Image: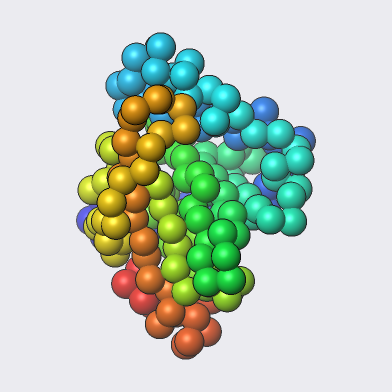
Length: 177
């Protein structure tokens, strides 16, 4: 992409009955990175969502939908008064590299600021490091994978304080977006 943001699709709250479709999208998106079947199977439990996850008051799931089909989603989870975690961000394989991931991340950033967070905490896939760094995240270290014993995943933070102070909730082009 040449820096333009995709305008296709609508962002909306996820519905509980979409849990199986979101789980499947997450698994397909992860598999697109070229991981082995064994690796994807090891990640399966971590990438399965249920209606209770989507409807939890501690979570916020948002779907990017185009032509009635979910092409991506993100999930936020409150960690503390100041920190919200980007618990998930997945894009359908046919839509990867077209700016939809950045659109989801921009919306997640603004949603977290709206909820009063000053930091968006991310434990990312190693293959997504360039994506997060290009979006303004800074690497903070690594954390052990919940799926792969001994596996390390890069950790990132996006500072939201300027966005929260200026109350730029959904203004595209603000705060490095």
